[in-house]
Amino acid sequence: MGIFNSIVDRFKNAEFSVSGRKKLGTINKEFEKSFGLTLLIYKGNQRADAKLSFADLNKKTSLKVDTSINNSDINLKASMTIDEVERAFLDTYGVKVQIGDKNGNIIGAKHGKATLGEAAREEYKDD
Image (tube, rainbow, N blue to C red; front, side):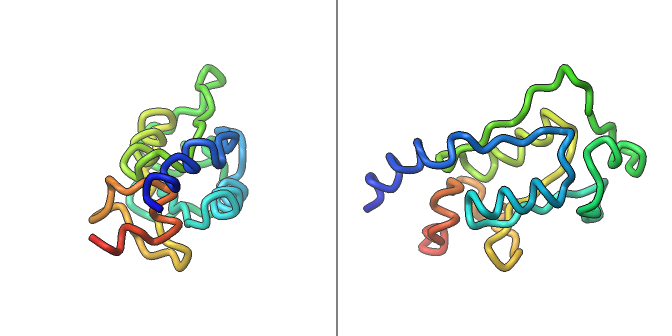
């Protein structure tokens, strides 16, 4: 099933994108709906309030959160690794994120090479 799942992941959720203008709670809900995983967004080293947008985060963290309109949206696919997704948020918006399982337990620290699809199917637990 590994090869089949890998092929499916390349096409699944290809339309999921993150816009810097969305509220963090909306991004979290859409991410969970698309991938069955949780997206933990931080302001500095603390979890960010879901009511905030990336622009609001800029006012509450010492990190420079890039909310310029020149930023492109992040397009996420199930075939991307957890490390790639976390890096995309950092590179695009200057924001730290972590990927968690459906219960919010952080996956990336030990299993960053797992794809979002594998994480959603909990295949990383076989390591």
